[in-house]
Image 1 (spheres, rainbow, N blue to C red):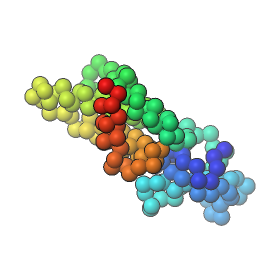
Image 2: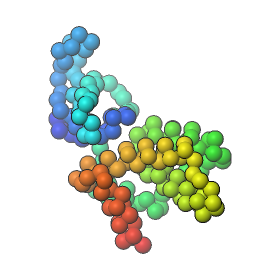
Image 3: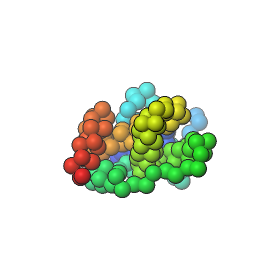
Image 4: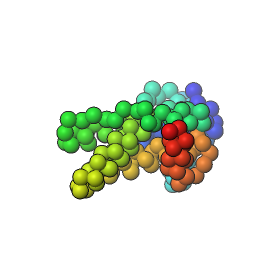
Length: 168
């Protein structure tokens, strides 16, 4: 069970803070059930209510600072996503995004970044679908890393770049 003020990742909402745990006074809520009240860190417009006893793979603990540094330090050693053809790539990216895991997001970023670099060197443009998944993966990963490292989301890309350069 999560505690008040814990950081969690909840589905497509990304990183959230547990603001309260308790029964809800709403007609649609079961009166005898406990709920988490979640507030997304990067969206002030939403409040999310989810049952405490719901066994849901879309909610997990946010990574710690040490886990964030370990992830960044391991990016160079991560395998790229291997797909036989471009049509399968979107399916693979979508399935990885559904796992809601930082390692998957970083693999998508690395794969698309290196693929785009190779395409540009060959005089080709990158695909719009790759761009969509690159932006999605960056958004989810950078927000979670920013929360773990206690920095602004805008600073995460340069932190990763600087750290990777130091490791070389």
